[in-house]
Image 1 (spheres, rainbow over the protein chains, first blue to last red):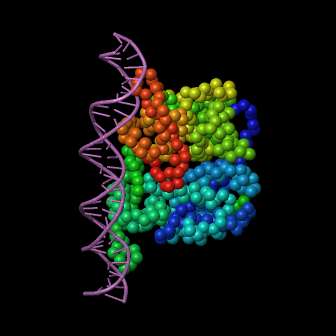
Image 2 (cartoon, each protein chain N blue to C red):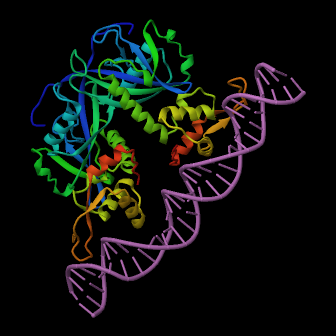
Length: 229
Length: 229
DNA sequence: TCATGAAAGTGTAAATATCACACGAAGTAA
DNA sequence: TTACTTCGTGTGATATTTACACTTTCATGA
């Protein structure tokens, strides 16, 4: 370092792209901003990082405060640091993405008076700041990740059918998958434990329920196991 | 947001994990720290982010100032935000990784009076802060990335032989690869342009030189092309 | 000039993985 | 009992991956 500067400081935020699956569609959770800048505009849940919390903690805190979400899958995505992201001043944002099970059960009433809503990808509103860009980055990451790591289960309830799982993959990846080949492959990894029957959708043949086995997954991972769909 | 806080600010740094290949080994560039904390200790090149530069700009500036490196492949890795990373105060660090061509030509003399050196992975010194952890994260990322994106070329001189390329992959991935299968696969992507002969290592048959074609790569990428080694 | 040493360069057959594809079974409701 | 809808299953054709060994080319030095 040729010269010595006083340590500069930057305002630091976290922003979370929250994915959920509702029937046959991939959805994103957005919050309506109450204050300027971009008051009244939809935005990713997020906020300033406090000095006494880690980035992960900040992301989880904001998810709970703004969206009433706890215990979700959460992973750091990317850090956005353009100079003019925020009109107020220079703000650096560490973006995360989260995967939420059971979108239908997550009542937005759980959030304290904040206006939160799930949006389909095809029906996104204009977003505050550079959040459209962050969202696009997260989607790209999710599509990549889901094909080589078994994280799809994080978007489903703990007990699910193979049809649900396939529908989820089709929603995320945006193309159809052959039913027989999909089942052969997924079951071949031996990560799903069959449970008892289920009679979803009343009038049809009931489908076998499965749950994901995280213990088996950890064991296989240590042996250099490769997942791919 | 239930309450209103004054925006907290955090000291922000960038740190760069610089990879290079020297003969048959993957190496890392480290800087000897001149000042406290960790004075005299080896560390990743990096430093504070100024308020009027983006994160990428800060990383490139530090690489040039501390290591005399310009025009390298650079990509954001991860942002580290534990509370006690830095003994002085809470410092959040955005880590990058860089890939450098021609390690042998990069004289550390180019760096202005800083003590910079290449270290083999098997011969790493104790590092300042949490830099050992950052380095491990970068290595994991490089190993993953190199198998599904053609970034290996960034670690070789502009003209290289297939044996060099294979040796590089073996160094990064840590296992041997079959020569015929490797060549078949790499040439199959049609990203390498053959040049003229070369007579490295005196007394043997000269090897064909190639260069990577970034234009072809961009074209293929747009058509949803998949690379894998 | 010829013999030697060392890396470069090349093809094929077996094994494995992927893909395309259609119908009987199981349940509910009318 | 019939109609309807979703669940669940296997095979053969094709493409990809893997394992494997010898000849070529050059420089050197006897």
